[in-house]
Amino acid sequence: MITEKDVLFEDNHLIAINKRGGDIVQVDNSGDKSLEEMVKEFLAKKYNKPNEAFIGVIHRLDRPVSGMILFAKTSKGLDRMNRLFHDRKVKKKYLAVVREKPQAMKGTLKNWLLRDRKKMITKAYDREVKNGSFAELSYEVIGHLDGFYLLQVNPVTGRTHQIRSQLAYMGCPIVGDNKYGYPRGSLLRTICLHSRSLEFIHPIKDEAMCIKAPLPQDGFWEKFNKLLNEDV
Figure (tube, one colour):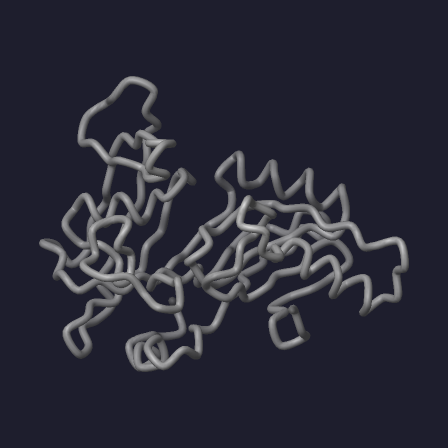
């Protein structure tokens, strides 16, 4: 269920939600209610629309990932935001918690990713592979706390499971992500990867936007607030 406290931003064309880890963005074969459906119901009730509200999925987050996700409320907003994402004019920031210390405090990762559809995982390679897709991201270690490292991650490309597979490939699987090599999974079906913010030029108003999602309140993420500054 979506409430006003989950809404990070809303205008006539766009609505940003602070997604909970474990929620699915679109309907899948699990039968669980999707975030798309929940946002549609929220808007229909808020604006008293008996024939449902329009919602367009602009981008996606993996089910176990939390944080900022943007939906379109109009077809015009959807088309123009899709173009911005396609042209890589949206700056994405993520926060990830890992147990292993990266060899370098900051760096750029460039890999070729190949999707294994049977196992539903993405494998990273340091060379070009047949049917693979090039992937690039930059990362920086923000700080160290209680045996964990907090990383800011800025993906350049937007591949399936990109951050998860690339961090795991460099020897730093995300906490809770046993699909990519972390020793144990989370009982909450989440991983410590959070979509922190999106920066872009509003496709209708032509205004600079930066929408930020606070960290989850789950008993673990809260302690990392002390490592964050206003630029993250």
